[in-house]
Length: 81
Image 1: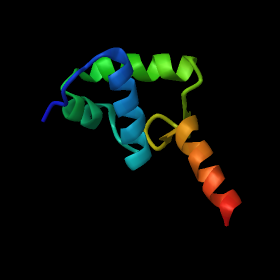
Image 2: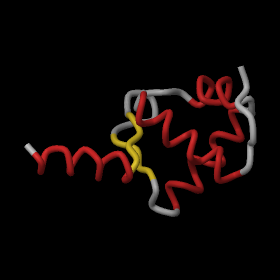
Image 3: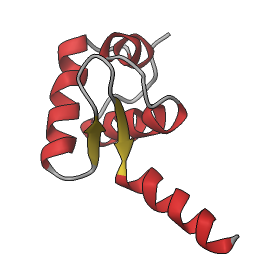
Image 4: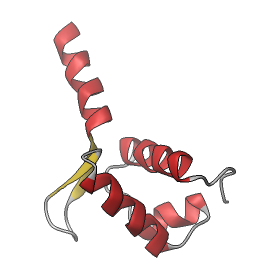
């Protein structure tokens, strides 16, 4: 099922949201949800990594994605406890 409004910003926001929901989401899974190609997801992941919005922890096969936005939210939750 493809999501509406596939502008670069909305795609990036949706990818970051997907990473927040499932840090081990694959490019193919993300592409299927977004209604774009796996290479399209790869392009956005590379751009967001270069811009410092997300980072990968571990190897390409066994690693996972994290967004700085999600990391900051997690840190703020721990500060409140």
